[in-house]
Figure (tube, rainbow, N blue to C red):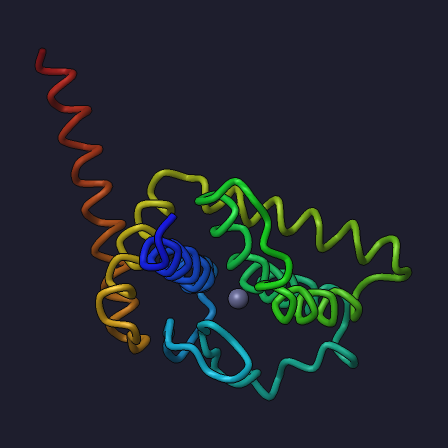
Length: 184
Ligand SMILES: [Zn+2]
């Protein structure tokens, strides 16, 4: 493989990884600030998230209140690797190390043992990948990743519009197909 092809494939993986974070954040209604595939000292790309809401205090919240919020955060963290591995068929644990550390830190607030924590994060990783596997969500990842490769950096407002338009276009096509089938 030529050097430029290797570089292009790497960029594609990073774009899908970041788009995966953003689409799952969108679907689970978690805010993010912007996403980029510009390399810096610590990472190859990133999605920034809004600061934790002051009311989110997982160490003092009741289990029932904390759980859904923690679950969303674990899923958004898992979404980078979950999207990347849907694209390539392989995990990239090295690229997702920071994400998985975040996921485990969050899960630690709920889980009573390392065994439970591992199982909980693993389950949510699978759940996240299944969510991304839905055709409509995967279409949004593809469209956002393509935009990211072109623009390198996308603000959250624009990213949300891209995701929403991709979802709308998917459903419009789907409805047209169903109608055409009924008319035939
Ligand atoms: Zn990530």
